[in-house]
Image: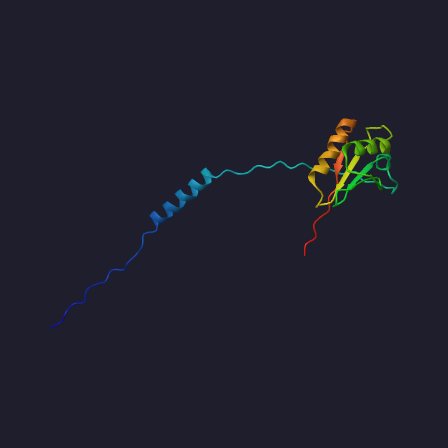
Length: 140
């Protein structure tokens, strides 16, 4: 007996619904995405030709706080850490001129209270130009 072979249909996948779903997902993500808008500020910094110190750099008052809590005003160490001594020292170094810049350099191990004492003394004496110096950490 001779059997006829059955015809095998090719299996195909209809890609039209898949493409529709991909386009719908694309449209969904495009509509729901918010884009971050940033404004850039371009600053052109001034440059100097001479290496001479300006008047403000000559007149600055530098206060150094060591790790053990000692104050130093323009290289001169104060006798104690009291607020009155600090105020008197700043007053003498500034010669009563509160428009001079006051630069604070504190050791990382120094107490934060010592820095606040400088702020308090400067505010009581009328200083408005205060700055901090920092050191960049070295990567090991």
